[in-house]
Amino acid sequence: MPQADVDIETKPLPTSREIPIRHGDFETLCDALDYAATGKTGFNYFDGKARLKETLSYAELQIKAKEMAKRLVPFAEKNARIGIAAVSTPEFAVMFFACQYAGLVAAPVPLPVTLGGRSSYERQLQRMADTGDFHALFCPESMEPIMRSALNDQAIPVMTFESLEKLPQGDTLRPFGKDDLCYIQYSSGSSSSPKGIIGTQSSVCANGHGITKHGMKINESDRATSWLPLYHDMGLIGFMIAPTVSQMTVDFIDPQDFTRRPITWLQLISDHKGTLSYSPTFGYELCVRRWRADRELDLSSWRVAGIGGDMVRPEPLTEFEDLFGEMGFGKGSFTPSYGLAETTLAATFAPLGQGLKKHTIDMARYTRTSEAVEASDMTREEDRRTFVACGKVLPDHEIEIRDFDNNILGEKQVGRVCLRGPSVSPGYFRNTQATEASFFKDGWLDTGDAGYWLEDQLVVTGRFKDLILWHGRNIWPQDIEWAAQAAAPHRCGRACAFAIGGAGDEKDIMLLLECRTRDPKLLDEIFTAVTAAIRLEVGVPVRLMLVPKSTMIITSSGKLSRARVKAKYLEGGIIDLQSETPLTVVSNSGDAG
Image (cartoon, rainbow, N blue to C red; front, side):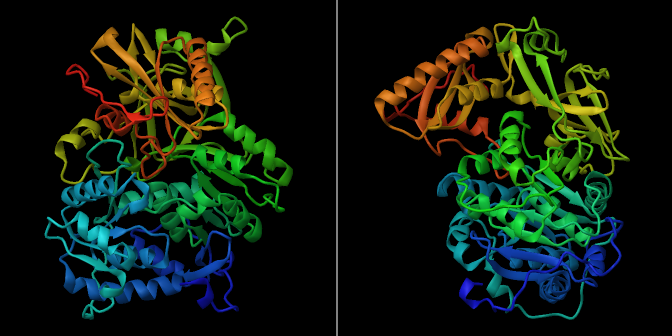
């Protein structure tokens, strides 16, 4: 509701549950909400200036979700898929849990502002609706026009949250049982066809238990704060479902508000004594860039500052520690973790209080032998690379590092990260080919990530599909991107590296770098500095193009989609700031991706 409509007596929901804490030991999400509803906690929704807009206690959520579920039971058969626009408002929580009580499979979908233009968004939404075989799509009234436009050629009704209140109400519920489905979580969209990852009641409850009992060790005084989008697993599972199964209060701000005013995130933690919050590395980096020393913060309550959703980069995190350490942020608060939607959310957590466990290796040795050998005094500076350990595997789960012949590798040997356990999804919805490529009959999942063991902790080094093979070397694109960003001045933003052209040694390596200037002299200086740095630090020639800000295509979780940026480049959709014209590129038939 608008700020003006808020009762001045409205207060945020408390931290204290006033019921005994339970760590996700439920068979279904309905069971979890039924228990949480007997306490005093729930969700608080704040605006971009840290002002309270609305509250939704678990007791209110249960009542409203059950009322809506009685309308949805006659509306659709059990297990029908319902797309829901995942807005950071009470309506989304109500609709998601209404689906649980009505036996309908919720499919949270991204919002229009996140996918780089209306046409791109509409294509993504069409693919999601197709692969999920949606019975209907629910959204706020403000989003109805673009949703209808996207689904114009499909017989899928688009219904507003307001119109659903007018559906005839039945008198029965149809809650999911322990062996039923729960939701469909779409992959981040780094490829052209997003895959619908199946979440079951058992896999979701198992991961919720692992996160709350073992990963973050949630206690009676914990309170969560989140800006993460609810259409991504880190927001949906980590900060809506995990708090529900542990009866914890959450303070939400909208992702757009975070982007505009990232310090509001820290302000909420300070004001309400938040103890748990997560972000990809870029969120912490954004706070450092936007800090203006215009307020006082007390971050001493923040005991778990989680890092997930993308590669953990130590340099910006160290800057965050140094800056906000003066405001109470603890050196041991950072908690790197590893997971993916195919394992519901989390697979590993760093031991609480450990902070950033760094491992600097010799990348020249790494690329030759696939071994993570510590850098020595003899290692050239440009060959040194620091990774961060992502912690230990959750109890009842297993991780193996394997080579491409499925041999299990030892410590500091780099290979495929494979995972098994009760949190693993049964596969992709109605996509047998993709399921068989990643999910094996013996229960193991090939995550597609590369990593190695550092003692008993997992270190992730990148995605195998992004690896660039150049003159017999394995080049990780993030090495090029990070070197460029380190060499570029503050007027530069995201970078993206990928290979184009022929096969093998005939490939060229492209590097796109966003710039927040169009001054020709400054662009020339940036071009010279970055080109020299890449040659020195990575040792490969690149074709550098300086591009406008917001050129990159970012997935729903904030990750760079190299595949989609590359496709945009090959289609001639990228502007070269040093020529101010879109670049027309004819794709070589030997370039498959």
